[in-house]
Length: 383
Ligand code: SF4
Ligand code: SF4
Image (cartoon, rainbow, N blue to C red; front, side):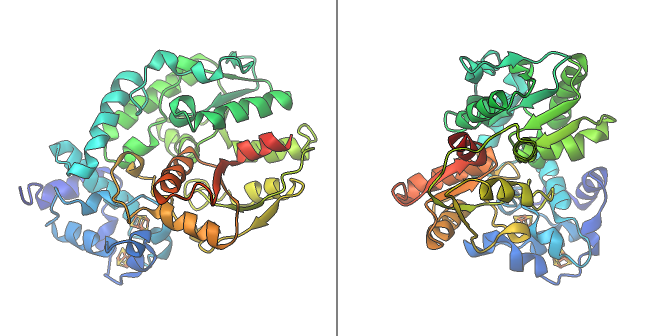
């Protein structure tokens, strides 16, 4: 099947998605110099933008599904081409036609599960709050100060559940008045939107917004930078504005106010990975580092590709659900970087990064060399 989407259709969808900024591209190629794909295989956002401009995008091509929406290339672009929005618009065309290469097919499974159960992991909605059993976690009610929204992976994934339980322990220890929505919580919808499924995103977002309003939610603390990003920057499109904070922001606040005492030493050399959607997309770089520096015994070292130049874990843009060939996983590169700077622990603050790095650690056989932890797990061991 070739070129089934004609120029007009692509332009229409891109315009609907916020414009046709790709037309401003003058093919300088700066985007390709920073794209992490070019460390593991060849990929050209410049070429994709040119194909979209002239309307000969091969809609069934694998290329348009590679972008992880990491945010590196938009920073470099001298013409404000908005590569992420343009790339997502192309995926919307493919989604409308139902054309997906084999590596993208798992996204369709996620879509089915999101539609029926509100999570991408094939789990039942009614079990969403089960992670909290035995953790002294209450159901959210209007009088409470904070809603804790763990998101899909910390609710269901066995590894990521440790983030939710660590968070609950910390919040209880600090005396924070919080609750969860359990089975009433839905996926935030951020990543499925980046795969081009705008209708499903809107449905998930509207359901969450209704639940927040019906339950009197005003302030939300999240574990995932993806929930953070969409609640803060995308849900306002629905004319709502909830106060949203990432757990790293709340942790630092609790420590600085003396509500959380870091009494235990963690005698480890560690490095911190900036998740794309926490750092580059939302400017939260200092809080996690400040928290880590307050832990006694802990030595913080930086990797190359840090802060604004952080190396993507490979999980954004819905890639967490797609197949990435061995040898092309960014997580492998990151683990090598962490080991090379002598870190015993690679710490991050995102359930997707944890998932991608844990996968890499296993497939690389690096179990003995390095541990992967969420920042909440480190703080939990320091209190
Ligand atoms: S946003 Fe990131 S992954 Fe996507 S094309 Fe740009 S640099 Fe590459
Ligand atoms: S950096 Fe911007 S202008 Fe240059 S090739 Fe990439 S999209 Fe086009």
